[in-house]
Image 1 (spheres, rainbow, N blue to C red):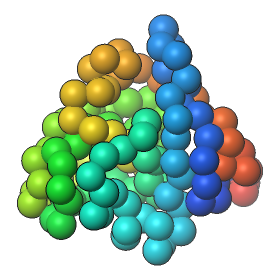
Image 2 (cartoon, rainbow, N blue to C red; image 1 turned 90 degrees about the vertical axis):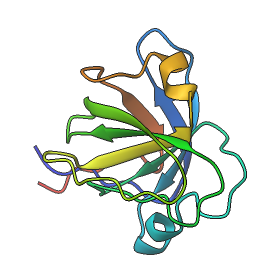
Image 3 (spheres, one colour; image 1 turned 30 degrees about the horizontal axis):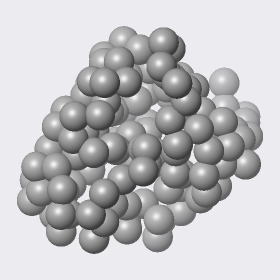
Length: 126
């Protein structure tokens, strides 16, 4: 199975038992380093790929963070206040970010497998 590759852009996050969530892809180095910095709110979720850890230095709001493996299965979900450094997660290949408290409402928890559409869709490189 090749690695997933998307382009910066917009799409949808599909969570079993939930309505599709607006999704922003941050796949370029520039988009990943900018992430949610300086934003006062988030419309849906942001997918950082590739990513195994994140930080909230310079953020204005607390966020929910979901670490995903290569198959888009949630490994862990954490809420992080501004000014924190998240620990790297073994096997994590992608990170989802959203406003604090929203992931529980979506039913996003460890073991849930999500899907995404958009972002020029996944292209296998192997």
